[in-house]
Image (tube, rainbow, N blue to C red; front, top):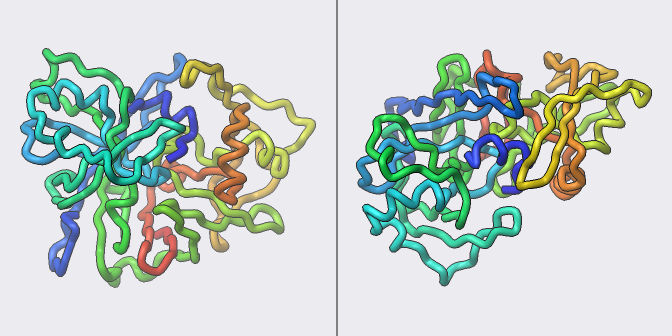
Length: 314
């Protein structure tokens, strides 16, 4: 994925449910972080993760703005040194995966478990020289170790339900009756990324629903922000720091018009944006005005129907 740069700074950080009659829920936790001197209680959604038969407590960030599930080489290194069988599955003969220009290859046919639910024979990108290093003397501690990203490639061909009220998610082949009354819209889905229409004033615009964007409810770019705010209003600095060794600043501005999702008013009074040209380019390439984050739906149930290309809020 081309993540928003800020998301990288933060984290450097079901069973494929065939024919099931019982709902197998996957629990997730909210990861907190102090960023540029300010504390945020919810910056990422973290899922317990097992890889092959390794006896460690890993976790991965759920990032639906990503395109490929991945393992961070730096974070995984001390574990792979003890159990090299995982790294031995690296296949350099298939097409590589590029992350912000970083060339990566896939670990083939891995067995993953998300909170005990198995995903078999999965190809997972190994991102070289990436991730926080984990000291060798801490690999056996009980605390979970963040070693990768969980992307929507695991959920394709399914209906993903995220219950923010109970911090859990699952997939279905057919939507249960209890979710039928959700407020659904047709969505555009490409490489697993889901783009949904919202109404601002008299216009309809597409935004990407991105669980990797937890700091801003509506993260625009420095060009699209001009369409929905007062040009004479001075922006308020939101965050200021360094990402990938480059300075980056984020700002807040008040929205000049109300925002609706399929007739339902959203609790959005401000939008955020960065000073980065890369964000402008990303939004142009994806044909969106920005990203909409999961915190906006923290008391709701979200349904992403990868079968019928639709997005629902209950």
